[in-house]
Length: 440
Image 1 (tube, rainbow, N blue to C red):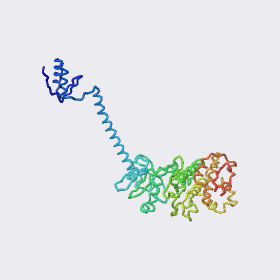
Image 2: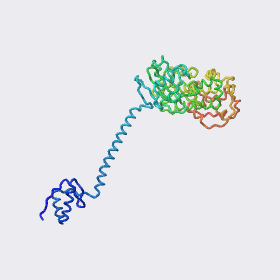
Image 3: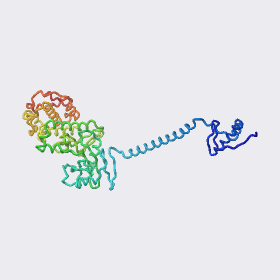
Image 4: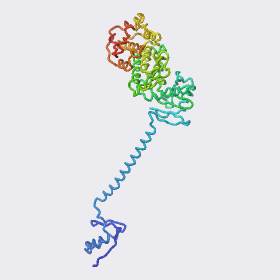
C-alpha cells in the first residue's frame, strides 16, 4: 500500500487518544483506517512529517487552570494595593491634625473633632435662635456662652465671641489659641471640645455641656452650695489640681492656663470638676522670655505677674490656691490673700484663727475623719500655693501627688486646728518635702 500523505495541521491529535477538533469526524475515521491497515507506525511517521506538536501531558488541564488562577490572583492583589494607596492618600490629605475640615458656602471652615461630623452652621443658628439672649447661660471677658440642643438631641455649650470682638485681631488670636490648646489636651478633668466654627458672621466653640455650670455659680447659690458637700468639694479641688498638673508636666510643651478661676471650673451633673476657658492659655517655649500682656482675672492673678509680666507655671499655682480656698470657704478669700502675702500672717490674730471658723458655714463641719484629713491637707496646700514668693510655692505636680498619696488620720481634733498650724515654713517648701496632714 502506498503511503498516504494527509494534511492534518490545525488539528489536535494525541497518540493516547484522539480529541475532537473542528474536523474531529475526519480524524476519527482516519484513526480507524490506520488501525485497520495496521500501518499506525508508518502513519505516525507520516503525520509527524507534516505536523509535530509538543506532546500534551495528561495534567494539561490542571496546568491550564493554574495559568488562569495565578494571573487572576495577581491582578486582584494589584488592585487591592492600588485601592489601599488611594484610601491612605485620601486620609492623609484630610488629616491635618485632630480636625476634619469641611468648607461652607461662604468659604469659611467649620471643623468637627471627635463628633458626628453632621453639625452645620445653620443647625447652630436654629438651635440658639440666632444666639438669642434666652439661650445665654453666661458671659465672660471673651464672649458669651449659650446652651444649644442639636437636631440629634445632643446638648452642647457654645462659646461665641461678641460681634465687636470677632473683628479684633487680638481676640481672634485668643479664639485660635483656645482651639489649638484644647485640641492638644486629653484629660478627664479638662472640658471636651467638640468643634469650632470660623464664620464671617461669628466665631464660636462647641463644648461638652456642663449641666451644673461654673463652680462660682454653685457656690453663690445657697441651696446648690449645700448640695456641694465637703466630700464633693474635696473632689472638685482634686480634679482641678490633676488637670493643671497634666497641663504643666505631662504635655509635650508645658501649657499655662493663666486664668484659673472659679468661673472657669465647670461642674457636670455629678458635680465633677472640669477646667475650661483657655482663651488666655499659652504654650511655654523654653527658648523665649515668656513675657506677654497682662492676662487673668483680678483676685486670682499672682502678685509677681503684675510687675514681671513673666509667664510661669507658678502663676497657675497661685490661682489654684485661691480657687481651693474659695471652694473651702464658699467665697473668695479676699483679705486673707493680702494677709498671707504680708507680714500680717505672723500676727497672733491670724495664727490663732481656727480653720473651722474660716470654712463655709452653710455646711456642717466635716464629720468623717477621712474627709477632715482631706480638708486640712487641701487648706495646707492652698496656703502654700498662695505664698508671695513663687519659688516657695509647690508645683502642681507636687500638689497632685500629695492629694493622691495615702495618708494617715489627723493627730489633732479638726475643731482645734488653727491657720497658723497650716502655714508651712519657706525652708520646708524650698526643699520640696512632702506635706502630710497626719503631722497636724
